[in-house]
Amino acid sequence: MTNSQTTDQEFLEYLVKSLVDHPDDVNVDRKVDEMGVLLTLRVNALDMGQVVGRQGTTAKAIRSLLKIVGVKNNARVNLKIEEPEGGMRGPRPESSVEA
Image (cartoon, rainbow, N blue to C red; front, side, top):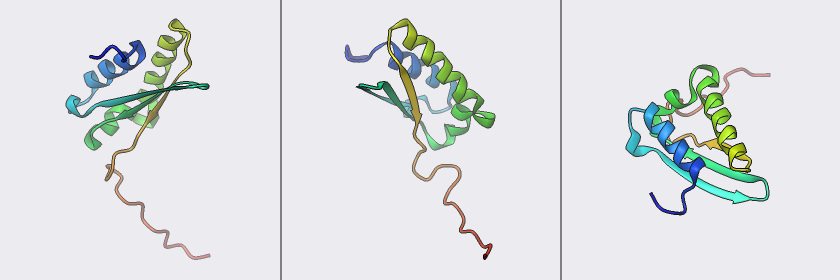
C-alpha cells in the first residue's frame, strides 16, 4: 500500500475484501474537501448484494464503522457505493401504466 492511503481507506478496503467473493475487484478512491473525506467504493456487480445487505443493513454498518474511524482521526468520513455498470438490477423497465 502506498503512503498516500490513510487509515480510513485501508480499513474500508480490508473490511469489504473480507466480505466479497471477488476481493481483487474492490477499489476505493479517497477525496478530501471542505466537507470532509469521501470514500468511493466500487465492487464486482456480483458482490453488490453482499456489500449492501438486506435493506441496506450491511452498508449502514460499514458507514457506522467508518464514522468511528473518522472520529478517531478528527475527520468526517462519508461513503459512496457506486453501482457497477450492468449491475444486478439491469435496466429499469418502462412503466406500462397510463394516466
